[in-house]
Image 1: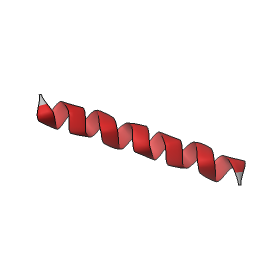
Image 2: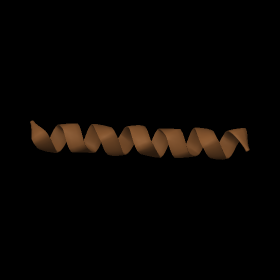
Image 3: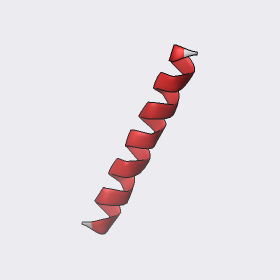
Image 4: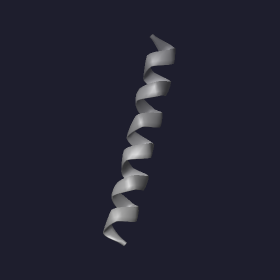
Amino acid sequence: RYDKLKRNYESTVSLACALIWLKL
């Protein structure tokens, strides 16, 4: 359960970074 949550968190962070990068 924790591993799945961690994986989801990492994917969300990477997606947020991608959106920020695209806005630059």
